[in-house]
Image (cartoon, rainbow, N blue to C red; front, side, top):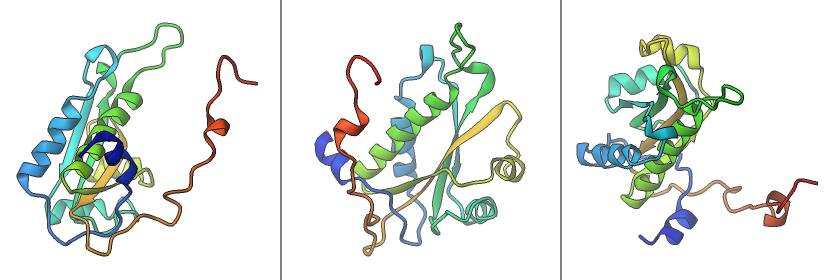
Length: 173
């Protein structure tokens, strides 16, 4: 798929077939995420793959926004491995995890896997439920699966603000 077509046709899928992703598709998604740039190429990201009924059932206790997806990936970062900006101490962890997540989502659409990026989850519950070490910070929950034939974009999907409202040149007014 050409890139322009890919980014125009990708949408948050919220209705899935009841079957986990095939191993080859999981591997393709993880490889796409692995190619993502990170601060100083430190690669502090970590991905928890949930591709069994048992693990997905556990996930459902941490969020109501699971959409009965048969698979999920929790993209996190290792707090001690991030690049840190010297001026204010801000680290690259969230940005790194977001770039990895975007790579995974775009690859998913390219290979026919539907994804929704879920921010509505209880991070403490996720940490406890999946025994995530304290130096690992959850950022993005990607629920995914093969789209149901009835899946379609949200009614708000194609509503864009005029570009002039979101882009400025030279300075903010």
